[in-house]
Image (cartoon, rainbow, N blue to C red; front, side, top):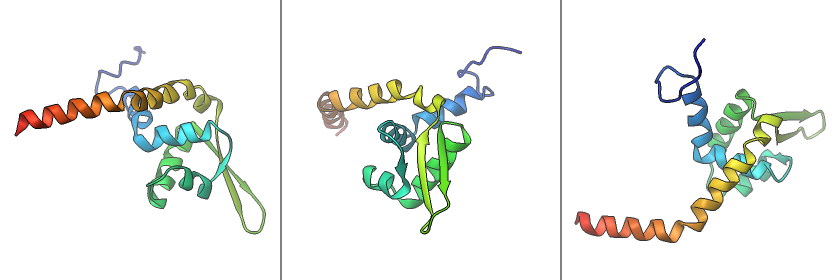
Length: 120
């Protein structure tokens, strides 16, 4: 068996990188790093995400073993989401990425504006 190499199109690690690199996946992981949340709480926290996209993102993260879904037999039914240990291991990486994007936003916006001005 060869070592994983995400540069190779057939390597499954490329799929993992793609999942983690998705905007909503990253933000769900950061939100859940603060503790367990219900679906509605997550949706409020992630301004602009649709119900369908949040459901799909949570399902994908659960399938990959990054998020745990716990159903409580109550009326009304209660479902909570939390990070698994492997999901929790991503927290330092994605919070650093989020901080990097926020800290460099003005520089990036200036670069975009300069680029767009050169294109016209």
